[in-house]
Structures are given as C-alpha cells and as structure tokens.
Length: 239
Image (cartoon, rainbow, N blue to C red; front, side):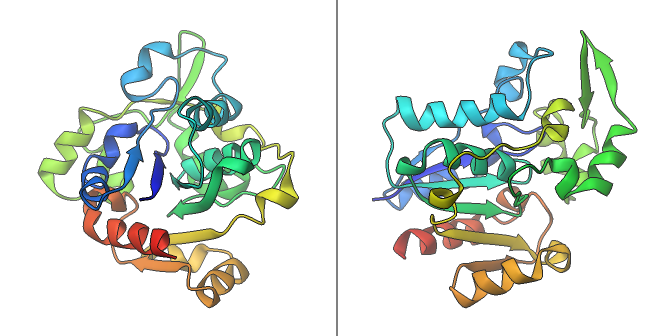
C-alpha cells in the first residue's frame, strides 16, 4: 500500500482531485488531498501574509501531523513549487516527488522565474481585496485557461475556483537540504502540449530513468484524464 499526498495548483483546492483520489483508494492506497491556506474551502483564511512559505508549511505539517512516511508527494502546476519546498523540509518522509504538469524550481527561484510570461500576464488582471493582491479570479469560463472545454466541467470548476494571492507566485523558494532533497526520486507526468517548454536535460533524465509520462490533454489533466493520471501514479508506486 502506498501513501499519496496530492497538492493542487493555483486557484484550485483539494477538490480538483475528486476524480483521481477514489481511483487510487480503490486500488488499495491511502490518499490525502489537502487544500492550501486561503484557497478552496479555506478561502475564509485569506490574508495579506499568505505566501509560498505558508503553503510549504501547510504540506510539511500534513506530513508531520499525519505521521506519513515514504510518501508519494504529487504537485500540480504551482503545486510543484510547494512540494519541492515541503520535501526539502521533510526529506525523511518523502519517497517520491511527482511533478504533475508542474513547476520544477531550483533554489532561489519563484514561479515568476519559472513561468514568467504566463504569470505576468495573469497579473495584468490582478485586483486588491482587503489588502491582498489577487490573481486568477474565477469566472464562468475560467477553466478554459486550464485546458478545460467540457461545459459541465467548466461549470463545476467555476463554482470552486478561488482567487490566489500574488505573493505566492513572486516569493523565491528557499531550500535548506538540497543534497538530501535531490536524492529523492523524481517523476514527471506532463501534458504533451507543455513538453516543448520543459527543461530538455531534466526531461531526458526522467525518460532515461523510466520516470516520464506524457498525456495528450489540457493543463488540468487530473480533471480531464483522471484514469491516465491514476495509471501513471500507480506505476510510480509499483517502482
């Protein structure tokens, strides 16, 4: 039995894994789908102090308080920033890091550094609410930004997406245990459309190690292709 911790991306919440988590549990595994502070059902906790480090602490705390070990730690999109930081804080609890069409940062990088054009474009539509600069505001067609086209899925997402604090995207990741962190096996589940923009050396290494999966779908692949994502996650556990 494996233990998965599935971390969502910007503007989302643990709800985005509602199609993947049951499949993993049906296969006999434990699954946690935490929601980061200020987002999803925790949107009422939104404050000017929330940043990347807040979200890293969120996930490191889940690993600690649930006493999880040998975890398959999965991060989607911005969640790649979060899981890298959380694994750095709790290297003894993580058995595999999985980047689900996610940012793959190095020490000292922010999401703006990793995906500058996309993030800076999002900031052009930012709004200040209660002292918090927010981006990724939900709308009826917000799911299109994440590669969702099905009308029912768009409506489902529009009712659940929440704005995201900009500070999370511009704060640089600080790593403290790099040697141990980078010794943890890394796997990559990538959308075909985003593959050309990935680090060629990183992708070549992952492919050579049998730790690369490509899925031909939009960015929110856990919503559009839950079976394919689950199959990849199960293969990672089998390794």
